[in-house]
Length: 184
Image (cartoon, rainbow, N blue to C red; front, side, top):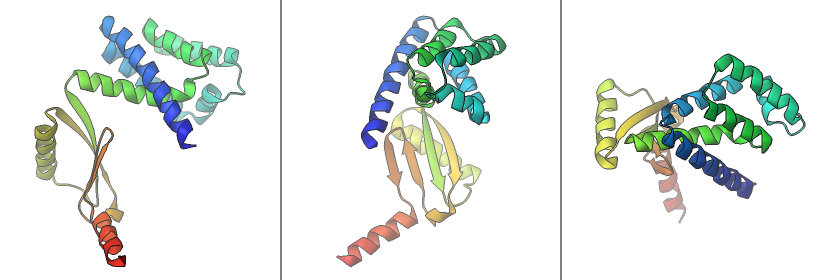
């Protein structure tokens, strides 16, 4: 199962890279990101539509009809429309979330930004958030966009995720390590 996930992720990155290159050449990368995010949100809000778009049992014709209706409503640029059609034709619509996430990373990278997910046991004060943003910006050399979520089970400390890097300085993890050391 893990191999499949890695394979799917690799394919999604290839699609995202190709789309990002074309969008960059046309100077519409931000637009592509926004349009894919809009379609992604629509699928998230409608489980029925999501199922129709990713199910291998639904015909391409039915998926194309559904996409055509969406395209008439949303009126995205041609590159986004053609990309969504390509995902249908190649039976890759299930990769949309991964592709959209990769596109956001590309846009952020080119703009000198990085998305950082932070988990804390309780809400951080605005001053702590500002200090954390500044520290992470100093370390990465990039503008930091924090996504903070509360996870009471951490007990204390925090967990930081930046791309593929994870720093776990939670009390829960520290206690777990201590327990493992004491076991011998």
